[in-house]
Length: 342
Ligand SMILES: [Zn+2]
Image (cartoon, rainbow, N blue to C red; front, side):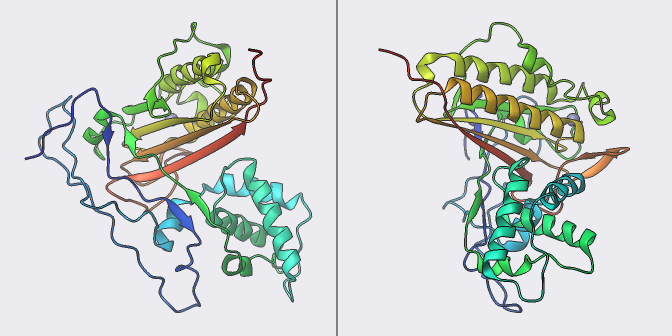
C-alpha cells in the first residue's frame, strides 16, 4: 500500500500531456488515421478520503506520452466564442489576403503571420487550433469568399507547444464534480518554490483584480473562489520581482488552480488582468538579458457550462485527461532593467 504524501508537499498528479500540434504523425493525408499515442494512465479515485488528508496518487510506471492525439488537442485548445470573435475582428483589420482560387505560399504565410499576431494580443502562444477557429470565424463573415488558410494546416510544420503544469495544491484531489464552485485551490510558485518575499500590504494594482471592469460577469462574481488568491499571489509575485536578488536570472512563475468548475467569464477577465499586470512588472524589474515566464494552468472537473445566465464556467468540452479538464495560458517577457552597478 502506498503511503500518503506528507501534508506540506504539493501533490504531483499524473502530468497531463503537452499539446504539440501539428505533430508530424498527425499531419497526414485525409482518410488516414493519425497514429495514436499510448493512452495516458488515469488517476484512480480514492474512495472515502478523509477531509484534509491528501488522496493517494496512482503513479504511472513510465511517463505518459506528452503528445496528444489531434482530436484531443483540438478540444483542449478551444477558445470561447467571444474570444474567437474578438481575435477575428482584430485580424480582419489587418491586410489579410482573400483569394481562394490559387493561393500563393507567400500569401498563406502572410495570413498566418497576421492571425498569429491577432491571437498574440490575447493568447501566448497561439496554437494551430486557435488559428483554425479564428480563420473559420473570419470565413463565416466573409462568405462567399474564403480566407486562404486551410492549406496552411498541413503545409506549415511549426510546432506550437502548450505544456500544462503538473503540480497542484495538496487538497486538489479531494475536489469532485459535486464540490461547490466556491472551492478553488491555488498553488503559486516561482522556480517550483513557494514565494517567501512578503508584500508590504495590498497593492492598488492587485486590488483591481477583484473588479477589472464593470461588466455583469465581473460584478456578479467578486466572491468567487479564485479572486482573493489571485490578488494575494499577484502581490507575492510583485514582492519577488522587486527583490534585486531575483532580477538577474531567468525565472518561471507558475499559478496552478484546481476547482470543480473552470473559471467563469469574470474570472477569465481577472486572469487576463493578472497576466497583464505581471507582464508589466516583470519587464520593469527583470534585468536586460533575462527572461521571465508565467504559466497559469486551471484544472477542473466539470465540462464547460453556462451556470449563471450569460456566464460560462470553463473553456473547452470533452477534453478530460486523468479526470480533469485542462486549460493553460502562458506569458514570456524580456527584462528591461539596467543591470545594477557592482
Ligand atoms: Zn469566477
